Length: 561
Image (tube, rainbow, N blue to C red; front, side):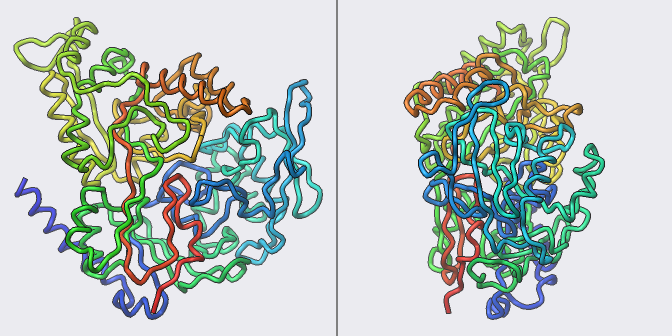
């Protein structure tokens, strides 16, 4: 352990001068010029708002774009790009019958009249219809296309007002958070060949084009794998942002991230993608007089996705054995001081729909061994288990390289599974590769450890419905990376979305969590807190605790004198 730690410290010494050389001035000098330097651990795999699901991208783009609707830091649904949240009560939403004779709903939105793309082109309903066309196309490659598929048609009243006709009346009928507006005047040509759109979009081929953005900032420079530079968007209609330059630096190694903060190369580390909790607790103890640390609990679920196409993991007994073999309480207590509790499933205890009475898997190596024996994986002379054909019980465990906590947990898992005769090989990748290809295209052979972060009361269609399994045929759309297919789960998800009675939905939520715990398409690890490490002079940043990052309100950030 000492040798590894010393090697890591040596790496920090090498990393810092390289970063510092890229600064035009010291951090203190830059602040006087209203420049904010942010350090985070991952670089976006793409800058397209709807291709790939990655917090690194969401964090950056939240400074440059605005969703129609979103949950605010108080977990309340609000309008951002629209002028008023439409409801059944205010007449903005109206029940109707679909062409198939089912109950649907028409929801009308008005785009903010001063919303303008960074090149001076007004944001209009032309962008709405183009975005809907992209979202509905089966080959566009969007991570979550379900919302677009539910919109049967779009009626345009004028340049700013439009009505969406939905194929069902869902309880969250007015939440179009995933309707990420695209610039029709720029990206339409790239969509001429939908199957190759994900590789042709201007968000990746011409990322600094000002016409791609309409938020407080626009991206003005990108150094892949290194940093993203943002400057104020002159066409922004809201509160004038304080900082004249924001640079997001990517430092994949969390120990190096901390070192760069202490050296002044960066000003802050966001809770969305920064230090792990154990590092942040230690940092707060040592540097609480010079930095402000916020520990924000939230809807973040650390887990291990299982590739259910793997014959070993297709057996539910093996999946259960893997979880019984992990001492998750010891991990929580020893690494996090109990501040990141053991997870029972994808729904956080902070969510109103959480149910704590689902099957639990306490540490029980004896039960794990019995399940493996029952599944035909026998242990001979204390070695690696083999089946009747002599195949070894071998799995590959993958996660994001450089994440201090995840790499420690991998070592613990490898050791605990080894005691039961399970061979686990660790193979980590940079986040951009891991999320941009390996997970998204289901190329992980067995186990992929990462976190999901959700919105309040968010139905898990994209991750648990069988229609959302990414394949080459659907251009890897969907987020059911496990390949989980369960008719009861599909039926529950279909029903819960159209149930308007909150109490009845709670019963359905209970069953969803029970199925998840019984089938274990993923191994729950713990519910995460987000540690924000901020300089004392930064004010206005409010953590959200859900999937919509603090940068959505970046125009409120200020530096005190």
